[in-house]
Image 1 (tube, rainbow, N blue to C red):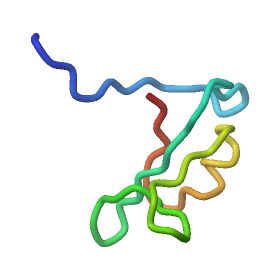
Image 2: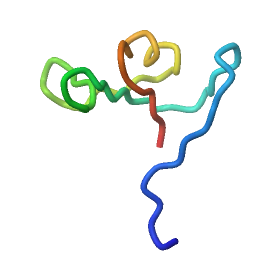
Image 3: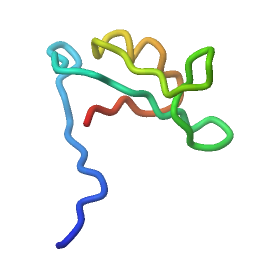
Image 4: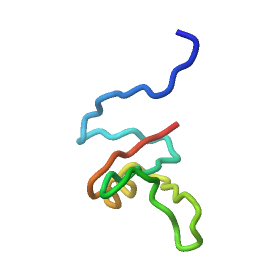
Length: 62
């Protein structure tokens, strides 16, 4: 494999990862990153903040 596009891992919701930044991709209507009020991709410092913002999507960390 030459390129890795995305790798998923399961986490324990009672012990979420501590390292950020975290991003949210919403799937409602069409997949897109959650944006801030200026139209920039919004990042979160903790998993809990990102998960609270996520309604119908995925929390990701790079």
